Length: 423
Image 1 (cartoon, rainbow, N blue to C red):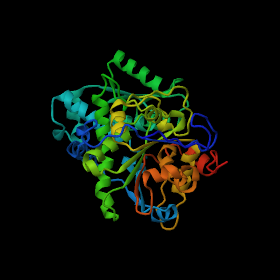
Image 2 (image 1 turned 90 degrees about the horizontal axis):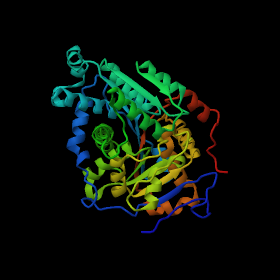
Image 3 (image 1 turned 30 degrees about the horizontal axis):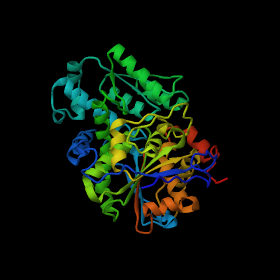
Image 4 (image 1 turned 30 degrees about the vertical axis):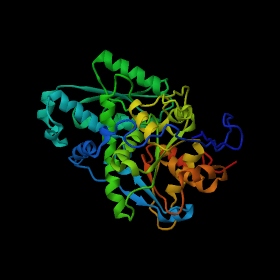
């Protein structure tokens, strides 16, 4: 299978200013059972995470919106948006991973099974007395750190959070409002992760990060399993909307933890009939896309400032667990500019017909913007054909965040800070 990249008609290696939507079909794709084991994301493992999440007083499945008018306009059978802006009142999905990882760590620390430690028990004074004081540390663009800070506050423990340069001051203050010590550094995301890991080792903190590398895989695995709750909810909600399962899943990726969890779960659940999965990244931080272009199975790293509006995707080094899942079971990798995310924000926030309104932040909307581009940009006709997108396609999207920075959201959606029209 040959590599295929769509740009503006120039050579693939040339950089062009607008709509630098590049795509590559996965030349490393494996049949189910031939690639990396999906056992970590088998429905029984994800059921454990969901059972824990169900013990939260505020737990309820987030909505799955069927955007019928948009689907008709874009010429597909259905578009379904899992809206994580409603999760736990935190406006993003990340607390699913952080809370489950912390719970698994504490159960291990207490030498008890997590089944014995539902959320009300973990937050009790009795458990606090047994645990003493624990500090959890992480690096975040905002959502993961807020989720970890929220969990730590519930448990009457401490959280220390570092953010990469250029991070939102609003998101910083939301993390601090949960009781965490938090700062914005002068480092990019990946360098900030390394700094936090070093500080955690030096100070005896528990490092809770959703990226992984050789020697650091247990906690990232728990985080990813926590993310699986979203996918498990979807499999119950889609039939209620008239579709047995998606034919295509568009999933955004930073380090690839969330995308890898979704891929691992669906690959395990549906096996040989799994949906086609399309991995979507910000073009200034497209480490997974570059890894797929290389097609030798090894992850690639993107450095520099990675100054994209998609802050949640501004990560230059792949999560190894996620990369293995995506490498072996995903069908296409796509790199998108900021304009595509801005378009998606405007589409979701200004629905057609009777479609539900969805408030989506920069990292949550890029897949919707990409669907619009597939329908309207002739330069992507070959990619659309390669995926078999047509009137019988049922497409699943994840809105991973709401307006987690409302000022930024309005600057883009109200004031047009980022253009979403072709130049």
